[in-house]
Length: 77
Image 1 (tube, rainbow, N blue to C red):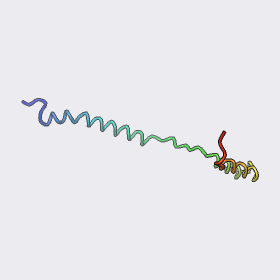
Image 2 (cartoon, one colour):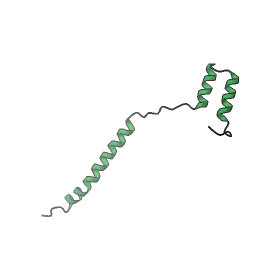
Image 3 (cartoon, one colour):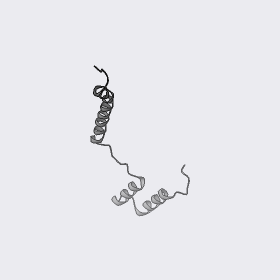
Image 4 (spheres, rainbow, N blue to C red):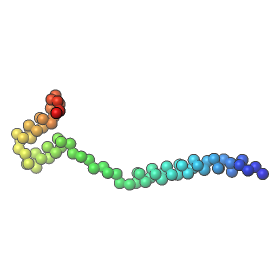
């Protein structure tokens, strides 16, 4: 008899690879199927636009704030 050779030997060597692949597939499926936290934070310009649209601030305050937010030439302190 040939213990450890032939079909049985190859199967014993491939078995760890098979289990590793199955575990990786299960982890991938769980990660893909779970709901992702895709909550997006609004940018300062979006918040400013929304406040202006709701009437929380007037046109002068909106223009000044928008100019400050989009002015990239001044250093941030």
